[in-house]
Image (cartoon, rainbow, N blue to C red):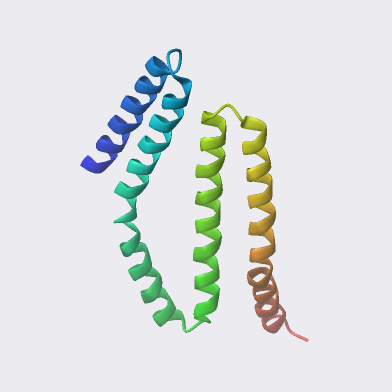
Length: 130
């Protein structure tokens, strides 16, 4: 629980630093925002191992194709990366570019999710009486 307070503190300090530096050196303000975001990102990476362990247990219990879980993790990763990148674009004053990154990410996620949707529909069709 104490990690969330550290993340919040780093976020607030980064925001204050960028607000103070932006009028003087806008290029440094962007660098500060990116570094602050990366520090927070690296703090959270350690928690991903528990997610992977839990998914491995689920794969073992269900016996479903592990490729679907891998695809699900990739979709989640794309979502987070796109959101992070769009945030950086917005921080640098390129919010319209950030919107395009989000749109592109949503389309990629839709395309990546099609095999999962197809698999779910096949399972439903098998369960329905003929």
